[in-house]
Length: 105
Figure 1: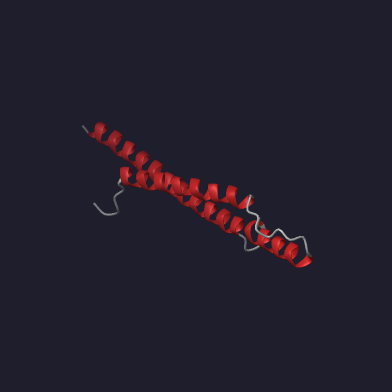
Figure 2 (figure 1 turned 45 degrees about the vertical axis):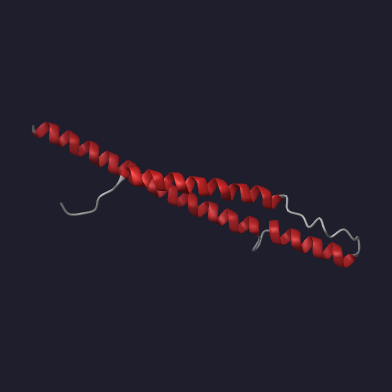
């Protein structure tokens, strides 16, 4: 038979691993929102600017840990959705093939 085969169990195991990775990324996003350079305790202009720079690097809208984690989360979600769609398609095709085989018999 031409084409390719799908191992639903292996694909489900991959989905489960990706979901675990996504949960870890979501935890990173939550932790990144709370990042603050607590050791910068002086209250002068330079220290305040440094504190803000560190905070922006962790949680800002451009190039931050939060943005990188959000992008990774989106990619993981897309991959999970694609794998789940593959499993659904495989199951539909398998069900159709089983139905066709029972009609032939």
